[in-house]
Length: 566
Ligand code: FAD
Image (cartoon, rainbow, N blue to C red; front, side, top):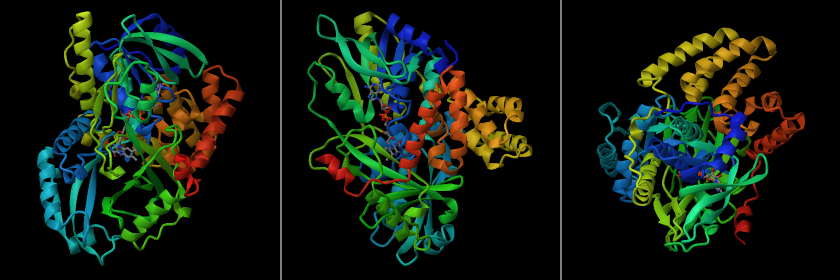
């Protein structure tokens, strides 16, 4: 049964009260895509679920990926056929359930002399990929000769070009996907709270975990939540959380974090006709992905040994990405001055002796400690539903054996992430056109309709209703519409600070960085006013956000990451 209620920081005191009063069947630590997926699957099975996130939802790796829902062509090369099949099929499910947010993206794979993929291998590889991933007929690969590839993407260097393959991937926004999954978990009865950190465990007389000690990071209080089963879905922090469990682990496997950086440049500086997945001189491959008025480029893959809390791009990362792009698209000659924004994320991979970062498997694994802590590590954004099902099967088995509770696997493939607002992509496009017609007379750009619908789906109607009501109070229409979006996110998406809104609910820090400055103060003041907080709190949020805002174009010295190792 759906338990639709608003999902707002305004309810926080009541929710914290429930957290310390109730006995949960499942507590999930970590509000990235892995934890979110588990919360939805568990709640949909009727398991009484609490999810706690120490920062904001998707504040870890799940807002810092390449943002592709992809079948993993590279895994075919590593012969990880099962992974290709699973993730390939998942694209279809996610596109169907969120057609506004998981959108088909034409991808060009240029074939170059001595490149990663030769013409025959690519043709065969993409064919196998289509078959394994169950790709629709109209989205199957097309092979191009050299002239056709040049025509398809005139910016490519021609001297080493031999041809190309065109295929379809799906682009998303990882943080938006995470929040939509969490909203559905809440709609199915889960309690999900951000800024609530797990600091330790409580145990029963048999030494089994029966609760989690939590710190409320907005109120600085400590509380304990009781649970039958605890799942650690803390991504790059999985080992840190495992270390808080005093019982013996069942394995000595541990994480190997690798850092991946992306940079964002203006579209006019590299006006690609579609996304490109291209070879770089050191034998790796990289993406260039247009998104609105910008193109994002990446990624790197280097071992990372510092605290997972604040990964940042180094000058070396940025130089590597730009020189790789300039090598494949020689006329653009990007420089660091073109970089408008950047992000760095950590892959929570499982260590394998002697393997380099790029060789490590992206497969997920589950570890269970003697005290019963279930930890899940590895995996991909794309495979989150399947990972969740595997974890929830274990939880369900435990509840059946120890509590006699019968549950059934959840059909999360049937749970719409847009409340069934759109039948398909065409419906999304029609809706976007209607929204554009509605906002242009108010002085907003037509492209803003795409931004609204990609981020908020059919909730754009509610946002524009607020906008119509308040717009006369603002001199700047862009501030008015941002306040209307904030109003929605405050009431329905658990936004607690201005960074939650500007970074993870709307991606403005990465994709609209130059529009952000005039918005920060009015947004911070409004959010503080709704929460009855003093202006000083708004100032702290503003300062925090501006720190991240500056860090997105200030890169650490080249040696910073290796210094961190010491
Ligand atoms: P996270 O998103 O990091 O979530 C873990 C959460 O746990 C964090 O929010 C953290 O704050 C919280 N936490 C930690 N400790 C505690 C505690 N004590 N109490 C409470 N909460 C805690 N996958 C794809 O499918 N497609 C891609 O295009 C893609 N590109 C990628 C590119 C890069 C550069 C990287 C790094 C990864 C990429 N991935 C991609 C992989 C994908 O992003 C990750 O597998 C996924 O986001 C991991 O999600 P997670 O929930 O496990 O971890």
